[in-house]
Image 1 (cartoon, rainbow, N blue to C red):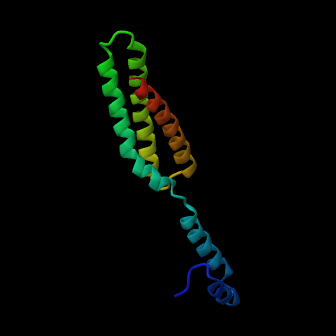
Image 2: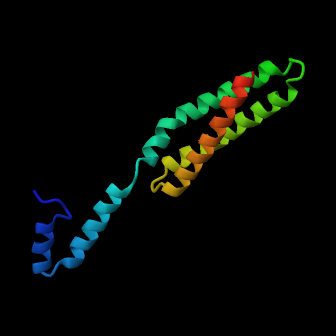
Image 3: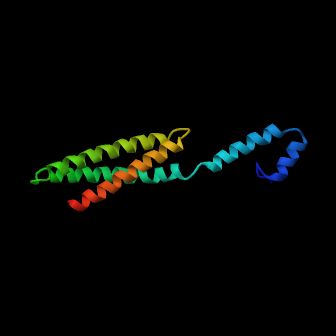
Amino acid sequence: MFEPCSSQLSLILISKGQFSKIRSLCSRSAYATKLSTAPREAKEQLAAILDEATKARSKSIQLKGVEFADQLSGELAKHGKSMEDMYSRLSSEVHSTSPDESKIVGILKQVGNAQAWYKKAEAGC
């Protein structure tokens, strides 16, 4: 069995005047293999994003009654909301019929920055 872009198959199809077919086959298979692991990684991180949003909101509620913690409480609530927003954007992008990898990578960077902030804020609690 030949791979779609193997050199032997290319030579056979070119010799028979079917070069346009091999180009379309190669571009399709190259596109399929070109997709990086970003969509797969994003699917794996979806649960972690929601988990962190839940933890941030619960810490925010816990800190509401604590003296001098009003600002941190508000920031944690805002962080929880932003994580939920990133979750919904990432989820819709990952589950779309043609996911845009650049958008996924951008959202994952935002998630990474937000998670780094949360770790610092959590250490201060």
